[in-house]
Length: 229
Image (cartoon, rainbow, N blue to C red):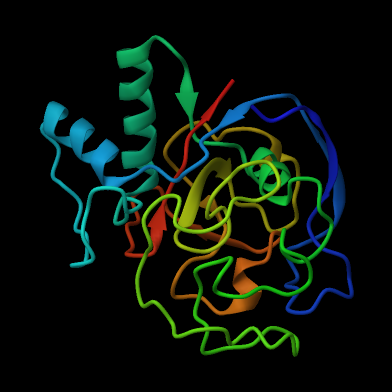
């Protein structure tokens, strides 16, 4: 459970690796629940088998407790609806603003780890350094790691940066026009992705960094975690 509060979403003008869609602005969120871990293959496969959906490709890395990948926004929202029906609790994808608030966990630095990061903390492409931090720590993993393999952020979320990009329920808006605070309705438009992944360079696993894809897009570096009101 994440306590409600306010924070500066986006990044300050001097942050290394900053992109032009990271306008810093104050956002307040109400208390909500969010998964400690990304949804795993074990969890998603149970849904897929029960509902007769095709099992997503694991890229040869293994299934079980590894985060599910190769799932679209449509797949992720269908999983949330199914789980809600199974449990009687309302699950959804996190809004982009709520995701950022939980990922930062009260920090104001580039990463929840500070202004430097290493592969003992986050799964990213360690062939690259970040802003002279000496972040080339360890060999690149070239794939995902199982849930709980890496340390949690100060609010208890594991792999909220790196490992896999995470779908949010929000539309992507370069200008941050308010859509980051709510879930998108309808199937059109692009959706915001947050967190970076195992294949990305360090600047893209910063807390402020954003990506996006269409609701039916599937990739080997994209998964999700669920939220709950």
